[in-house]
Image (cartoon, rainbow, N blue to C red; front, side, top):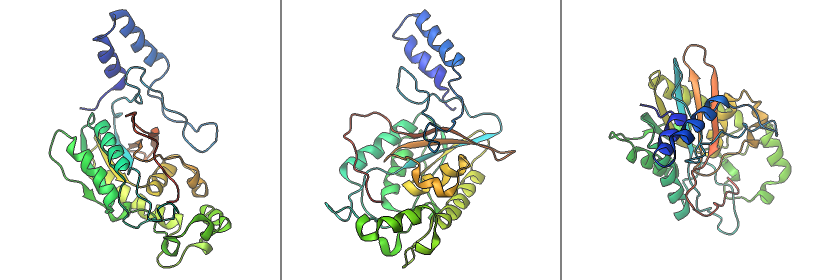
Length: 282
């Protein structure tokens, strides 16, 4: 059973406050359209901020609409950058989570325990696999993560191990604008190449997910950007501007009949009292 957050928030509040106060909270969530879909925010790129439950400080989220499927997209937690104090790009290298990153992933899994997930998908990289295990461990039924190669992070090729200065600001800007002539060698990928394989894997997961059910994907910054930009019908040249925090959760509904995608919230990070993560070169 999927949680209906306007009702869930009221029930939680009811046990601590007066009946009248609880009814006011329920009325407010209905009047303000608490479960409305995202529109673009003021920057014209990222989705507008989510409507939050005043009690639990989490996004207000209704049950899955009739004829729809839902995906929760989770980014892995903070990593130990292989360049140490000299942050370098690492892309699809299998770098480990930091101790903070592990705690962030645990918090993300704890948030998702309130949803009955049909499948938990993961990138094959260990930093995502750790997060996927946290999600699986918090589900009521025993399940294992399903690994999709297509959810692996963008391969930076010859740019791996290099700083922004070593790669060059002009090369990075041209890369973000999808100038494929600057795609790094040694197996490096462009955003169009990445997005093609990510969307194919997303569609495979949606095919596995029943109508009326939700699944989760634990992956990476650029993988989540690829799926979110598709849901927002965004020009791929603007994809690099999407904000996706470490161990944050993005939610999108998919209509089985029309294919229409509805972003419910973007880059929600549960409050847990953890320190701010370091999220530099990727």
